[in-house]
Structure formats: structure tokens, C-alpha cells
Image (cartoon, rainbow, N blue to C red; front, side, top):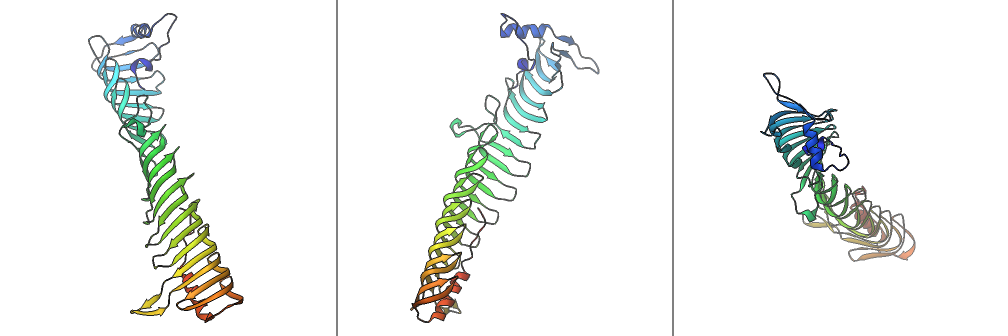
Length: 337
């Protein structure tokens, strides 16, 4: 909060009121009248210097500039009743604050930090870049050095609450933030076109129930951990291949069902629909399971995608080819979201 009186840092003596301190400070200043090459101004008791317009009472009024004794900060702009009021600029510790002031504080404008982060909007009455849903105030806009932008709720200058952050790459997240991180329900659209929706945790990865609409039309839905399908889930490829079961790091492992639609060419079926249900290990049939190709089926034991041991066999070679064809369509996106 920038007030002309507090910038002078007056020290109260015993039994002095705040007004007594202010009056004493004004009477202990060194005043000079401006001329051709010198602006009218005065030096306060603590060494701070003001130059600019004065009202009939000798107080700053109009346009002026106030510089601290150690040159740590400087305000230049409009004054009213000895306080910044109107359009002005404050430079402080490498930061630059400019906009509209009232009663010595910024009420609307922008603040550029040495780190390159730029806040714009309406700070709260305490001068903090904080905006929460409960205040029902206009949102604050934040520009980051790398090109990312954020608009929404803030607490002490970092995203906290509901907001939207857009990265320089085009990735956009709209949802809940906590202490600057994606945390809670939200939706993210990647530059590649993939769409993530669900619960985000920690450093922003999907965690818990969620859905990912993949580029090209595929979809992953189920339980996520660190951005990957982990637990019960379903993967539907754009060509109709369906994987349903238990996933570990986005790879089928456990009891599952793999369905592959019939393949056609020029209106003719060149490969019948196939389905496998049973044990799976890293996307390969492994353990007890059954594969069905049209009216044909095989039930028995599988090891690393191959028939093994005794079982009920009908056209086994056709069944093996069908399972391999289905598996060929089940490429999973194993990166974290």
C-alpha cells in the first residue's frame, strides 16, 4: 500500500498522535522554489525528495515525483492531498507498478516483477495480487516469462482456486489450482488436440477417474495414476478395437477383454471380427483365455500370445492370426497426461 505519509516512515515520540507525527514531518522539511532549470520541491526530514506541483497549503497536488532517501523506490504521477491519486508509476526493488492510484494505493493497473512475471488487474485493498471467488471481483491476468498466461483466482500471487492457464505451446487447462499447481477437477486440451478431463493431482497429472480423448478419435477412460491408466479402464481405438480390463501404466495386465471388428475391403469382409477374453500380460494373451473368430473359438492356455498345452481347439491357426490382428490395433499411449 503506497501512501505519501507512510513512505516518509515517521517515528512517533511519546504521547504523539499520528497527526502530530505528520505535522512534525511537514514542518521539518527543507523547501525550495523552482526556477528556469529547477522544479519546485522539498526534502523531508528522512531525506526523501519531492518535486512537482503543490497546492496553496504547500502539499503535493497535481503532477509530481517522490524519491526515497536511499533511491530504493520512486513514484511519479498524479497527487491529491499529498497522496498518489490518479495515473502514476512506482518503481520499487526492480519491480515496476503502473496504473491508477487512489488514496496512495494501486486500484487498477499492472505490476512487472524482476522475474519477468507481469500481473494486471485489480489488487486487493492491501495491495496484494489476490483474487478469490468469494470476493466477486474482476479476475487477475498473469503473464509468465515463457509466454504462458493465467487468468482466474489467485492467492498471494499464485494460482489458487478456479482459473485458466494457457501455455506458449497452446496447451490449455481450465479447472482447479492449489498453490500454483493443477489440483482438482479440470479439463486440459493439448496442442496436439488431445482432450483430458478428470481429477488432477500434484504436479498436474491425471489421478483418479478421468477420460482422455486421443488425437485421431481414440479414447481412454478409467482410473489414472500419474497421468497413466492404472486400474480398471477402457481403451477404444478410432478403428473400433476395444480393450477393457485392468491396466498398469496404460498397458493391459490381468483379466481383460480385447475386441477387434471385422476388416473389410471394397465392401467385402477380408477378416472376421475377433474377440479374446482371459489373462493378459503387457498386451499379450497370457494364461487361461478364449479367443472367438466368427463361429470359431479356442479355449485354453496362452503364453506370451501363443497357444500352449492342452485345450479345446477349432481352427487354431485362424484363431492365432485373429488375436494377433486384434493386438496389432491395441497400441496404447503410454506417456503420462
